[in-house]
Image (cartoon, rainbow, N blue to C red):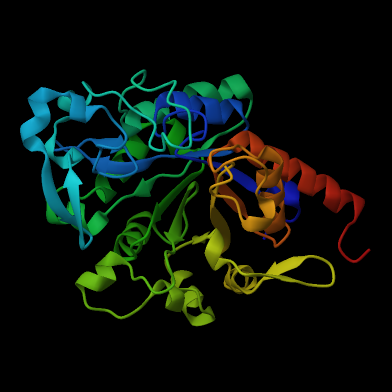
Length: 350
């Protein structure tokens, strides 16, 4: 765990996605400006094999594709990781075609749509170039935390992303040295990546994402393994994760905090640290709709409650986590600063 709370990392979840349409250069740039230690691009594949940043390969909710009559015939229904989904999918479009689209706010009922249609879909290469150019301007090294989305699904289409991701990272001098953490909700691709990069690598780490406790990694579903995410959160499961990954990513709802004599503690955090795993928590968002009951403020679901969001993050920081995923990195930075001041004023064991 971090030697002190000032070392807790702020990861910009899809960029500063509470303030700009997610996975756009504008969202990433704002996140860096607001103090993010790293930015997170979710990666999906185009028809011609380019890696682009979208939360899902279905893009009707995050782009203006429905307004493009030339693409109307490509709307379809697919089964993605066992779930039927209607819409338009990145793997049915070339990069050139996707570049004609404009990004839109994914949560228009909660967040501003003022920036709709101003930004395009971007590639991983463009994201790396942005971070490489912004790093010296801000006087700090900024990490990149890519998530490989639906790896079994894309591999089944002949569009596996793992080797392409590694090749892209090695093609840029910046990502040959800057911190990179590759994440996935599946396990097989992380094991494959561990074999490719070796037991230790100077700048690349692997993060096992953990979903609902009764859910299973989709590659486990396909191979008829019964292991659940809940199983993976037990000490024996964490011990297994430590054989191929460097960190876990757990949902707020899966980190049960208990109050100790000095500070809040979490069995999951303590057990993961005992196995040498870092712990990253997702996802902290500033709107009332997302905040825990004790952190909500006045107003409706869309009302931003910045102080509540900071207090919520501080609660988990006090439990010894290593990093947070947040949609508003400025608030994450404030939470780390406040937690550090509190720790300095009241050090453990005082």
